[in-house]
Amino acid sequence: MKYCSTRGKVSGLDFTEAVMMGLADDGGLLLPESIPELSPNDLQQLSKLPYPELAFQVISKYATDVPESDLKELIDRSYAEFEHPQITPVVKQDGLYILELFHGPTLAFKDVALQFLGNLFEYVLAKSDQRMNILGATSGDTGSAAIYGVRGKDNINIFILHPKGRVSPIQELQMTTVTDKNVYNLAVEGTFDDAQAIVKEIFGDLEFKELHSLGAVNSINWARILAQVVYYFYAWFQVSSKTGAEQINVAVPTGNFGDIFAGYIAKRMGVPINQLILATNSNNILSRCINTGDYSIADVHHSLSPSMDIQIASNFERYLYYLLDCNAKKVVLAMDSFKNNGNLEFTDAQKERLRKDFSSSSIDDNETLETIRSFHKKTGYILDPHTATGIAVGEKNSDSSCPLVCLATAHPAKFGDAVQKAIGLDPELPAAFVGLEKRKKKVITISADKEKIKKYISSNSI
Ligand SMILES: *Cc1c(COP(=O)(O)O)cnc(C)c1O
Image (cartoon, rainbow, N blue to C red; front, side, top):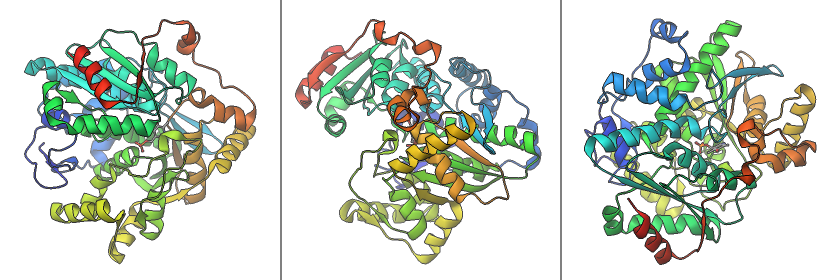
């Protein structure tokens, strides 16, 4: 399988080259040249496999330059870190199916991808005798999942900037209690936007980037999307064997369009998904786009589901490439227009296709709280605010012909404040997180000053 950029200037890459490139050198996003389609018979063959074996079957169709035995070992090692034997189990509550994606080391769905990506990076670096310094800014979930993905790995150091005192206490502890020598936590005196802007500027300094082999772990990396495709297969197998259904509807709480794009790929590969339901909070650019064709940027609102407080959904460009009939020139024009005018224009035919590919709506914080409250009352099951967004929007949009599967993207204990606000209870912390506050910490406080941060990286880079 070869990879090409949505903007047309990069092509013919192998899988591992695409993974190491991250963002394409022409500013676009990398996609496989084709999407393998599975027949119902092929699906049947995969339906009984344990998660890691299923992951191998799906990923190996795209990672064709990694020898099979190596890939298998990488995948097995990645999912051995999950505390549930099924990795991503499906539970039935209130007539719908919850796909629990939060059984990894940092209790959010990002572990499914970042455990794999960390091992993959280490593998490729060792083979090519290279090293990498990962740099990223986080508002919470990505940073901890990335740190857990690469802690203790050879030839990789990781520098994660978080806004000091502005991530949830458990998110902060998850990051700062990792004391491995390759992990550097920087508590930046500023906001997330300050930290993010500094990271962008540092990546823009190409000399510095090259000198320190800077790498990124954000959700534009194809390997992250690919690892997430697997659990759509898994959900389908679980729910169809329980219900005999011929298709499922899937509701996905989305910010960066990453997780829902993985669902789109799974559907194109042959997973019988009827509706793909995209759920947003009040940062609703994506649901506006689907319902009215209005893809115009607005200010970021802070919500109770902070991991979806995003206006520029970087992975949307991947879908756009298909919507524009794989015409890279059209993608370049569209992205230029978005950059210059803050919006994208669609033809009537494109709007129709958007509505055919996705159903969508958004809910505000009140509805999020109300959903956590009513769901808990009916079932005793506690939802995190992101998952609640998916469930509320899923129930509103799902036609009744198929079972509804809702992706649970975080453990409720990770967003205890919202849960407390909704139901007056603190969700129980999984055993591995009890007493976290007593552990040794590794973090430095640093001002929101690009030069100071570069100096820190220079003196600690591998
Ligand atoms: C990152 C995140 C999301 C959004 O995922 P995207 O891939 O950006 O769509 C949703 N919920 C939680 C808990 C997250 O951490």
